[in-house]
Amino acid sequence: MKPTLVILAAGVGSRYGGLKQLDPVGPGGAALMDYTMWDALQHGFRRVVLVIRRETEDEIRAHIERGAARRIEVGYAYQELDAVPDGLGVPDDRFKPWGTGQAVLAAASQLDGPFVVANADDFYGRSAIEALAGHLAASPDTEPSP
Image (cartoon, rainbow, N blue to C red; front, side, top):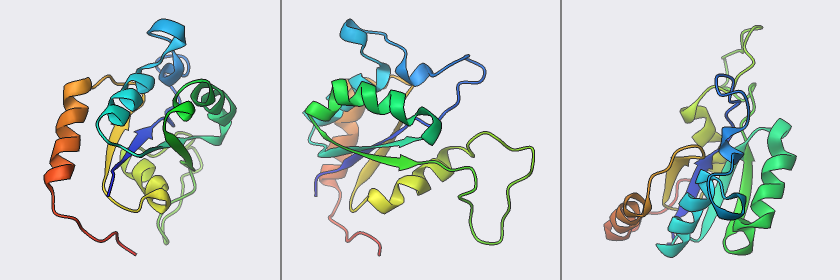
């Protein structure tokens, strides 16, 4: 099974002051996540699932449709503040996403095999993606969980 790249792009950038996951760092307005997606595509990943917030969906989709969506299958998952396990509640003063674990859980319904997770605002480099792809390729095939 070809692996999926899950990119966590739901951060609010409160300390940064904006959507750092979309800030251009390269030619043509390329963001860091564009480089990660490109490297993943070069190393056998078949699709990417972006975990986003509904409030930033239009901006992120527009960016992805101008670039990555032309080369790799793209899915979207939404990190919702109130998507917590049964029996748990959300404090009244909570407004930020819960973090990495909840973000990956948000993508779970779109995963049917091996996957790796990357942050949209970090640069990992080609060798990191190549190493992950190699690890997944060397792992025995497993059946996806129901």
